[in-house]
Image 1 (cartoon, protein in one colour):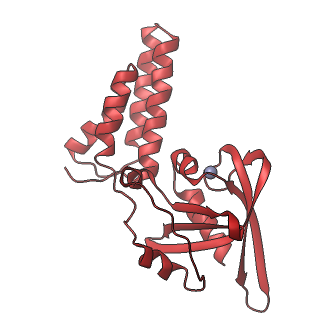
Image 2 (cartoon, rainbow, N blue to C red):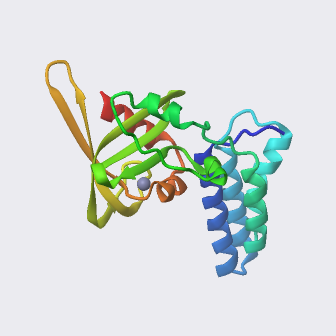
Length: 210
Ligand SMILES: [Zn+2]
């Protein structure tokens, strides 16, 4: 079976399985856990269209998770079918930011690529944050001024309450220069783990560039 799960879908399935696991741990009422199981099953299968029977079987196993051991085994199996973020070399990344000189590109460990909906890193020396993701299937780079905030707030990318900073991108409008700012997670690895749908991510990038 080929890889067919996106990172955001993987995190969504993990989250659903965790909710189910919590249900199993907090109640012994079989009718409650059965109801939770069928909700889990419905939600995870709803993410996909046109699954083969083998793929459907793998996804539906989310509703069989009953304890931590099941969860660990299932998640590691699931991860084998996640399509990783396209591997980019330093030169590839540099090409996405033609205007930036002395770009500091982060090293991303091999096992993390499957967990990424976007690549994001901070350059504190330059007060910048860089983001790379696909928008409508096209690799897109965006960078902006970045100022960490002292308290937690809602991130525009993952919509979770996290440690964030103000990200401001500046671009040329028809007549004048336009700047737009939004809070986004300080820790992009954590943010990626929170992303259970690409919707906010892609619309954020579009909004910041046009
Ligand atoms: Zn976030």
